Length: 516
Image (cartoon, rainbow, N blue to C red; front, side, top):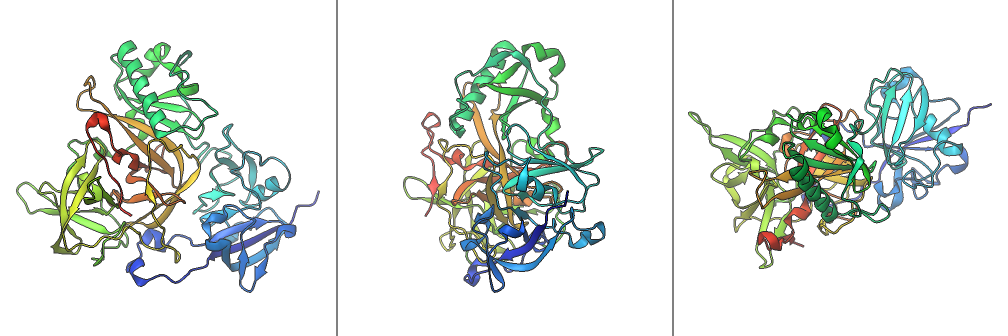
């Protein structure tokens, strides 16, 4: 049987003109070295229409990556073999951020096991032996004879993927194997209908009921966090001292009709600073490479801001993080969001590189969220639009709400002084119990979004904390909290949900909305 011909077209965004004020004066290393290319992978009969050195991506997915669905052609070639030869790896076709296909792999009706989709998927990496998907169809799994040279794409046909070789080097699944509880025990029944969308509020209710179950039935088990993945599985995070094996007969194996597994807190490999209380202040990890320390006259989301940490028997040291967004309360008072642990004890925030210019003071700490609200100085101008990427500056529309449906597998973005522009895919949500004492009457269940940033991707520094994360509709989903570098959860970035800024009558909080 002859090998199907495959057309590969390397493309880049059409960069439009934007005001200089929207451009970073210094491009961080993470963005400067990242590939600006995407790849169209198609057949000769579906070759995209060209006009000069540009082409239309209207019939390819994910097309929303390109303004007006138009891209510049970098190079194009046709081949009839499995993939480029190994010696060409330094210019390999897969060294792109996204691979576009003539079919939408996010559509559950797309069959990846037969026909054109299968042929294209097997043509991307050398030595591909198998391409499959989990029952949820939320991502792809590639098995290859030998792992190709990095970097690897974030998505293929709109879906994230993982890749491993025949000896299982690499990543076999996106999420760790479930360490299941007792499948005869099911809790939170009726709380979540598989046909109805999950929301932050429903997820918070499920977490609260799960916590109550443990308090009543297994009081010695300390519940920490409930994680809900795109595979529609729950992972229950418990304290490190828990003996999961001996407790298994008592552990629910189903939560809200979904399989439930268990892991100890240390298995997540969160950065060590996330366990320290109080949250303020914490010194970030050292950063290598170029970062944007520019002292911009006008503040906007993604500008480096600084504060002083008081050091015992020494001079104050500087803490640098990222500005968030501008919000307002029901009286019209405006505040800039920032990360609490990046602000010193004197609460003063100043311009990085211009310590004489005070930006403002932290006026409010939103309990247990690591979100601080900074009251800006009168002479400080803040524009609620972040820096451009490929000529496009996103427009923020609102903050996420508790009633918003959970949209697994959807794109998200951030632009920080440490990373520049980055994109990821929301693949998990979690609810973390936060309280001073476990049996306190008033508990807080904090919502987090977890974005998949790609297998073997660039480490996101701690200084990125506080950066806004938004979706393709301009909704501010949350604020970057930490990135997991090692272990079975590596490659995921957690952000505290912007819905935590909503009004909450039970806590006597009026709440804040996006200042637009």
